[in-house]
Length: 397
Image (cartoon, rainbow, N blue to C red; front, side):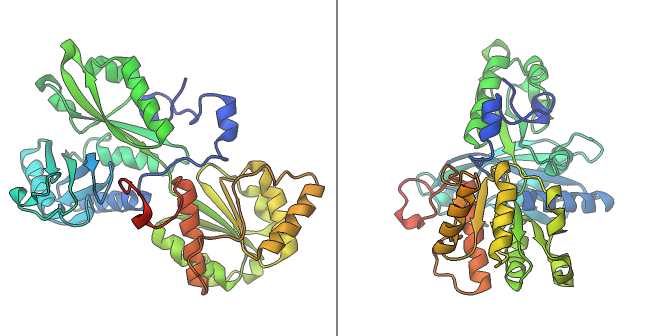
């Protein structure tokens, strides 16, 4: 049964069977990585490399109980102290920067566990205040190595399929030269570490099925314990907005802040310079056939034209969008539902249709409506209910 990712062999579909492939877009995968932050780290890496400044990468590889950031959060640290990204809400960054600079100086990776489960964070000299345990890996970056962690991140950011990245975090002395380096291919990883390929496969499958990265514990050569980070990296959300009015520009502002790709379908003569500047790509209505949906793509109808919205829903519905929203009152959608059903479309059996669109936050202005739309898309893609955190039992993440 194949699993995703160039680090587990050749790149393959995220599913193990045709049945799962067909259901992929109807059940959006849970997303965990901040692709916007990863792109910023890559840009900073390129800049520092050009300036011949040495650097290290701090990566959250383990989290227990409460933590502001999750596994996979990263911060790139230059030898001169410049930083991009983050591994906490600000309480770890100062200490982490110093440890990253030490890793640069010693050219040796290291691990630090920030543990405040007992609430006594004074012992490590920082104020966490979140009663959790965060494990951070500090890796010096060799810019001459085409397979250093940042270069590997670069190789996956533009793919639209999920990727799995595996790194050795802890192990016996004989494997210290592999710590912090991305490892490729299950068979090769098993050969180099002594880990059972079957156990590695099970751990990878657990990550891909749940959509959550994890720090796995394995038995290596002669039963020596070791830990590997198995991280699932997914592409940024792509949003297709059908419409060319001013409220689409408000949506563009929000998607820019989130780091999403915004593609807009509308009447080309109505696309102003602002549309060109704030969107990823513009399409005329006659070019809509160029757009293909995947499991990370949301679709919102906001043309304010009943016939156009209906035609676009009829066009995209066979692709089973992971999220399909439509502006307008409930009665408008009910009428369209009846007409499309009469024309042979099964909207009743499609669970990812949202109309009226957006979370109920009392939105009135175009900007507030855009925020409500993006919030609802996020809840669907993260498989969360979208309620208030104060009402949630257990941990936030």
